[in-house]
Amino acid sequence: MFALLLAVGLQGCQSANIHVVAPHLDAQQRQQLSNSFAKQQLKVEFADEVVAPADFAEASITMSPTFYDFALLGRVHDALRQLGYQRIDELRFAQQKHFYRNDHIGVYLLPPQEQRLPLYVESENCHPYRTLMFKADGHWQLDDFVSASKQGLWQRQGERVILTTNEQERSEMRYQLTTRNTHLGERPAHELRPQQVTEQALNCTFVAISM
Image (tube, rainbow, N blue to C red; front, side, top):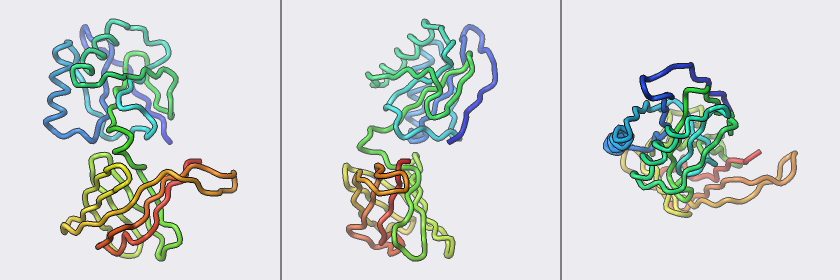
């Protein structure tokens, strides 16, 4: 968890700086987004260093509780609807510790839930211990802190997770939302189990427990 604190600033007739968090969008999609906002006379900045909370909706607008430029918010909604986002959440109370000052707002765009994975999962009963990171831009990285990192591209299709290494070796894992017993009791957990694995470092069960 971290706090995102953005400085005060103005952009001419635009009363708030608009920070877009959407690392999964490619260059063409980003240009389409910028063009849609430009039609509303709005300028956006992409904040790729910000990690979007996994439980946010596909489209969310985060702002200060004291932000009341409803005309600007309406233009943001219009720009997003032109891109196909029909459900847009408005968040005013720093959900997941994402804080915005009064003249800054954040626009978070995420893939559908059935296409998402947790940022990190860790091995369960594997030696050596290893972690698997799923970046929002579609890349994965596996580290066992002994040998060199392994990397590639990932794609989720419902319960199927396909991982392709940089050497074009393809592995498949099964994702499910389950539970694990912890010192705090039973907790929800994301689980990945190997199905058809060519990269042996992935031949492990990986888990992320929601505490």
